[in-house]
Amino acid sequence: MERNYTEEERYNLAKKRVQEVKGFYGNLTAYIVVNIFLVVVNLMTSPEHLWFYWPMLGWGIGVLFHGLRVFNRMPFLGKDWEERKLKEFMEEEERRKNQFKQ
Image 1 (cartoon, rainbow, N blue to C red):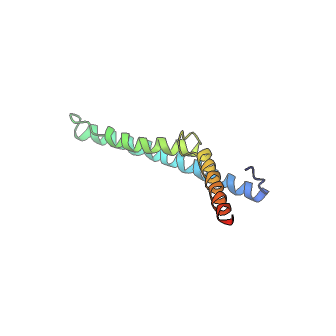
Image 2: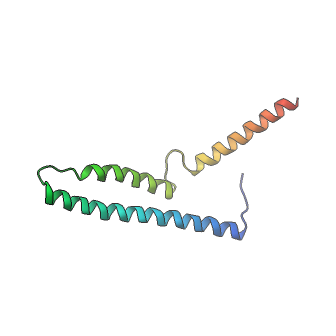
């Protein structure tokens, strides 16, 4: 189901893509800055009890999945999956419609 996009549609898709990449880099930058701050606070206040890695791990998993989605590397539920599922639902609906016509 190949679609021919107009110049405006291609521009809007590219603009949306740039916003997604920009959002990821913003998230990554915040992750790095905040986690450096947390490491410093942890080491200055209670170096005998290290806790900074817990928020780093949790947020890091989120950043990882954000990056996978933005750069189309999602092994599951990615763009290809969406298109296949959409086509499958459209074909199913067409079969259902034709079944009732008979």
